[in-house]
Image (tube, rainbow, N blue to C red; front, side):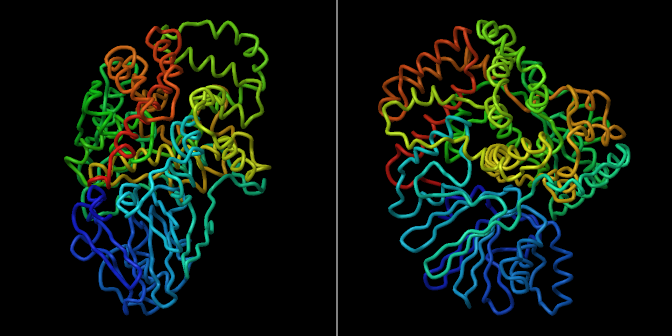
Length: 607
């Protein structure tokens, strides 16, 4: 199992076996390069810990624990976890500022704990089996378990078709689960219990809402962001920045440069299609802060890149921005071991066009519904399909209740098309949107936009964006850190009134004001591109033959899940420009390539 994760930690390996318990760890050496190998124990060896991640406040915790009499053998952040557990028991996780997937064995109580950070930045899968428990950072390792069943969970498959990613706690394989963000799982005497120790989200009490003058809040946000970046730069190796040229990554590059005595390395990806490329904006930041800048122009090479992505994401995953993320991570890994990335900024501060639509729909929804029949007749080729597709989705969802409307604007395959695609299977009958409804219900009483953004924080951010960033970077042995997802930043973001995030067509209002002194006007006022790729054009042109090959009827029938006629119709309509089905086809391509790699292969998957 450990060999399957060499890419996550090529520097060293460690194991611990105590009767029926075995722990194994692959290490990417970043803090305490000489003494930080894992597993790491307390003084008498009764507590053993392995950790994937970083604890940014470990020095403060170590000083406090030393005053309490704990003796440390290393300068590693992981060793702090063992001693903190001795003091606080299961509640030790509440003290940690960082990103982590942790396994801790307490030999005295014969108890194993699994813990995941409050934002779900680092992954952790687990499988209860015959009274035992198997776990790993990636499914690749669990596939090594003797007798592992590769039976696909049809409920997870339906969720994948709806979202293009699989939400926790489900995984693509039956009986295997993702530990949800902010949770601790305890295994003892063959029994498991699951508890949520943290639930970041909007404050429900009106008394805690921040209503100070905008300029004061902007200054506080600027200070909090700088504090978070400073903490995320803690490392014994150089730290770079993945610089898309957008607002969030530009802010990270600015703060990192202000905190660093040497030029910061920055890494950017661009496209020949200028509408999708932010290289010019990235260069503005690189020049302003004197960074050591690196660039790469992406061209569609399906034969190489899409199978590589299927290898990287060991369950179906179809966020097409994973392609540039994978490439920019490969570029960065040639120069640094750690890089900062801007995930979380859009969800926390109102960066999506869907949030604008959420606020506009109650006022212009009736007009949009009247225009819907006309919009449906628009061809998808006027702007490559993007603007027409957005307009059609807005009109379709404008009359729905707030949550269903918000979800409909991001949905990939509708319930009707999912039924067509899976018509040959006995479907489980569950509704993937129920996960959205459950999360939404937890914030009753909060501000309308804050409630919808919280759904994105708990689902889309965790199981799409953070999965993309973690897997794409760790495939190249690069650790990515996300300073926006730090309590120093989120505590303020969750308490802000909606109008400081979105008002009219203005998005990220307070964040833009906070960053005005640091960034060029072109960045502050620039429109969001979202690290997207020209998938619609690629699938009509360069990738069209590859798409027809991977989604050929004979291949689909052999796999046994999707109706080939439905998929053939989608391909024909997209290539002809009648509709933009790029998100749908990318999802189907990703599933087919994943299936051939991880389900159709005989025996255990090689490392």
